[in-house]
Amino acid sequence: MTSVVPLLEGKRIVICAGSGGVGKTTTSAALAMGMAADGLRVAVVTIDPAKRLANALGMKELGNEPRLVDPERFRPHGIEMQGELWAMMLDAKRTFDEVIEKLAPDTATRDEILGNRIYQQLSSAVAGSQEFTAIAKLYELDQEGDYDLLVLDTPPSRNALDFLDAPGRLTGFFQGRAIRIFLRPAGLGGKIIGRGTGVVFSLLKRVTGVDLLEDLSVFFRSLAGLIDGFTERAERVGALLEDPATTFLIVTSPQHDPVEEAIYFHRKLMEARMPFGGMVVNRVHAIAESNGAVSPELAAELGAELADRVAESAREQAALAARDHAAIDHLEAALHSPPTVRIPELEDDVHDIDGLAQVRAHLFGSD
Image (tube, rainbow, N blue to C red; front, top):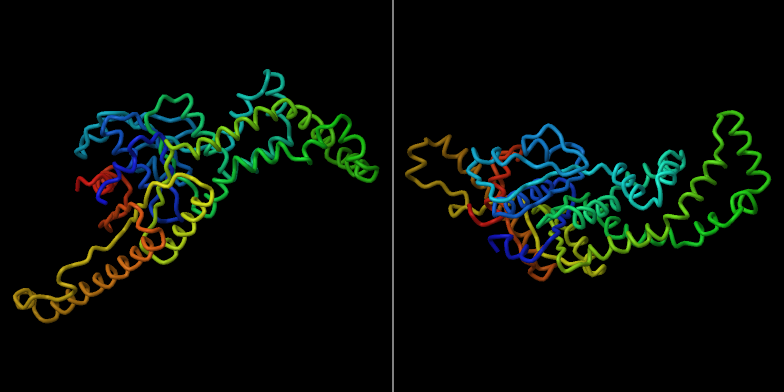
């Protein structure tokens, strides 16, 4: 396959997944840029705190809401932006707060939850995992953003498995027996908090000035009115992942560990019945026809010593190419010959629009 275009037909959401260091952020950005150049309104969402996406697009920073990338940035690189490219970097804590703000029945409840110390600690821990908040942001953009296509750059694949399970785990939490016990009238002040525990809470309050028992009571009392909304939101988010208009692209490179991660993640996708679109294999060394041999004419022109060095370098490249293609053959056999787009090893790392334009050309078969 020479182009990702057939993989994206009829899709509204593309989720790029794979192990770390294989070029997911670059692939996501180049894919979004290509679709926007062809006339779509596209938003690319990254979770990468290193700001690689912002740097590649020539922007100082990205926030938790999509920002339009100036189409004039692309013109010097030979790209006429027929549509719109929007970009954002996920702020997991802010996104979790926004879910609370949307679900709270009134401003008093919203402020009580957001200002609660228990919530602040819990939301930082939950949002720090990024899985549910990433899909929650996708859901929000899908419902409210009026985009033709959303492209998500995910955590490394082992974390992405949590990403797949996040809606179900959140639903299970809110429907679980433990939280129902806490929400019973006098649950915290009665059987749940025994005499010894009460002494500990009293001591902590005296030493720190913080009434943890009161904070817990307020937190669960305020949360009670949001449970149905949270459960419904989690179910909708889960349905979004399984929607036929969503597709997963597994991004990898032709080395042993990334290939095995790709095989593992594909298996988990199939078990979860998620829509798999195809593979993007980055940094593939091309097989040279000469296979390391230097013609007699070139050897005479270079001289014996330089010709030997050139031949050695060519043999090394041929060995790398053979290794890469063997790894890709293994990958395709394990996944039963999925649609696969190969991106060659580029001379430099992708760090600007020119680099993204090169990747885009290979992704869309226009190189």
